[in-house]
Length: 324
Image (cartoon, rainbow, N blue to C red; front, top):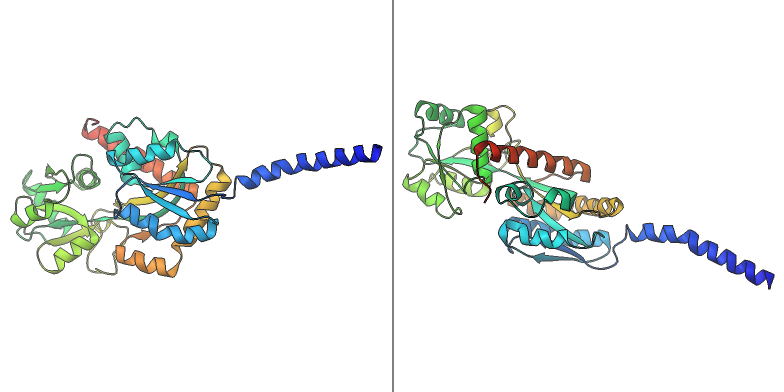
């Protein structure tokens, strides 16, 4: 009877001792499919990146990744869904600079993204290219800045709207290099290229691939990119930083988790993302998208996110753009 009682005591001891280990293990293992919410439509670059990495990440994490598109309100609808999810590593958001650092300020969102999310993994960065109509007699960014100063207000620059990524880039050029221009905001980018070609505006910015295509056939003139370094696909196209020292303007894409997700789980997902990005086949596809791999730790990604949030929200306040 005494022996039986002792066995029960030892059994209870082992059960209790194992409980913390089981709980810790549960916080680092995925036990069901992982949902990745993309707050933009299918085919958007954010969506392309999420799907590009999903299969390799699934192999590492031991569970399939299900990409779900939930567009609307500049990304707010999808992000709200993730913010309200259980913080257990089974629901992620694919975010980008616009919906994680610009739209929340511009659109006065009811969701504080900084309080609602944990940064998990930076994936890629991208950049834009300054283009001009051939009718504007400038051959370089230096020429454009000089021309704009000599003809105040004469250079009309089209962007995707007040507070958009291109608008903020040109404002940075105004602040750092004295670029003088008249801002022509568009609702979407469909009309920008036709208006450039027709001479209704003199300058705009395009994605690198589009800019290269229009420049190669002489319809537009590419002056500089906002990248850190020249792209090997256009080795003669300089960066803005070569004219304005220290200037870079990069968009970025990355994974986020609901606030409170265990650090061990975040680190595990971060490792899976970085491994997926190192796949040679993935690297080949990425090269065609003209985006740059930018793997990082969760901490480094968090610092980039916070710095950009502060930088762009400060610019929006300085410009006096009223929240929508």
